[in-house]
Amino acid sequence: MAFDGLFTRKIIEDLQSLVSGRIHKITEPSSDTIILTIRSERTNKQLLLNTHANFSRFHLTKQKYDNPFDPPMFLRVLRKHLDGGIIQSIKQIGNDRLIEIDIHSRDEIGDLRKRTLILEIMGRHSNIILVDSERKIIDGFKHHTPNTNTARTIMPGFKYELPPTAKKVNPFTVDDVVKYIDFNSGKIDRQLLQQFEGFSPLITKEIVSRRPFMNQTTLVEAFDEVINDVQKEPTPVIYSDEETGKEIFYFMPLHAYGNDYKTFDTIHECLDRFFESRGERERVKQRALDLVKIVDQHLQKNRHKLEKLINEQQEASTKDIQQLYGELITANMYQINQGDKTLETINYYNNEPITIPLNPTKSPSMNAQYYYKQYNRLKTREIELEKQIKLTQENILYFESLEQQLSHISVEDIDDIREELEDEGIVKKRKNKNKKKSNKVSVTTFTSSDGQTILLGKNNKQNDYLTNRLARKHQLWFHTKDIPGSHVVIQEDQPTETTIKEAAMIAGFYSKASQSGQIPVDYTEIRHVHKPSGAKPGFVTYDHQTTLYVTTDYDDIKKLLKQ
Image 1 (cartoon, rainbow, N blue to C red):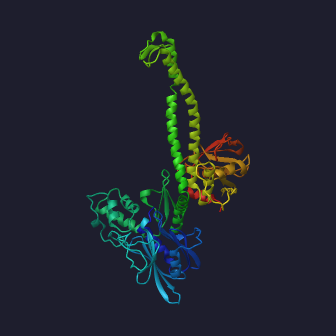
Image 2 (image 1 turned 90 degrees about the vertical axis):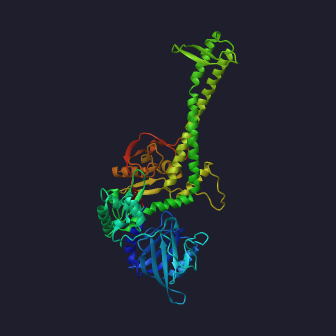
Image 3 (image 1 turned 120 degrees about the horizontal axis):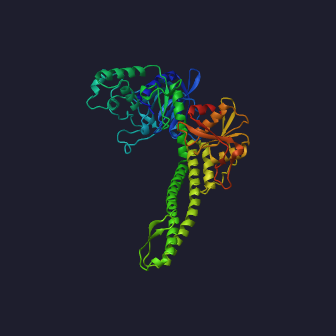
């Protein structure tokens, strides 16, 4: 992520079209988001202001958000002071991530008043503050009392003060970049970050990458070159790292990150795309935090159990040695005297000498019986261990599949997984007399490039319904090969090659291997997919499969999603 001062500058430039627009609706869809709906240039535009610790930002959005029935207090204050107001200016303070929106509105008796909405994008310290014409705080999204923040107070009635930040130089007004850099100290990118306002590690890395080495001449050239590029028309991009799955966005291509990127028509479209899936995952995380923790605990518990069982199995594999010791003691009973600690004899199976430990307090026959008992004990234990290992491996696969599902589901699908865990006895059933268990099951629908229907199950309840009830026997079924993932079915009897490939891509995307470069996906007809008796939810076996290797892309998958 690189929502730095330079990125803020480009958004401010683009938002000047909102000046003279009228605010006719203010909503707070979540505990960290405010949306101003502004009537400008004969259209309604949604300006999103977000104070999330990891996702703080502001931009125009086309996403739809649900609004709480009971408006929070801060939202009521904004509506009272800003509803119907006209935007006079949108400006950036210096080159920092500080934005001020001046608004003229009228009070209850019709008098004109000036209000300023201040957005501070500072990670976990991000805030939205409303001040009057004298810079007195009317209210803030987050309050800071003198006891909780000694630097400044954010409370109604207090004078607004800019956040305490390090004194840095505005890169657009600097006359000589060289005088701020100590070339003997090295780490030029870090020095640039410490000296210049609004720079992020992304842009400092870009500057030093523009030349093979840095000296007084090349630094000035690279610095001026990047600053010149920054002031051009934006070309928003998103870079994706296939190995880590991480993405980076910026308002222009970066030499330091190569040429593998996706471009967008506007900065706002780029940000909508970047934060869409992250915002959904964050909402899921908040709602399903207890489930994620429970699934992870059971997964780790079973993995640890499997490790112990395998060690015990290796110990049990010595049963044949115990039997051999018993046989050799019995065959050489006449050579053993009471009190002997070992028996040295010839192993008649390979004619090699062997030394067998003996208990000197026991008779030769008792020593032989001891080894026979060890053999029988280990033999019985080995059979039980095989059962336990198989059961534990199935449990690991089950919890891995739940882990994968929790990473891809939407908020609406959480209850399905919670109900499943309750039915399996993994979590306690919640006492809710008013809520009846729903028998309705829905699956996600995609439309291939050839217009054919592809269905996806996002959790085990949906997977079982899709595979065992909804799909017909000659339709194709998809699943990642030996990797936890969702069930995918093409709801056509004669699918095209394009549809088959896109169905495999969907199966790969909704799997634990979604970030891999080449994902193996098996597909076969439904008639070759079977659910064993007593199997856990979502578990099936299949045969007569064909394997495809696919790569996945979020944007490609989203295009196929039926709206």
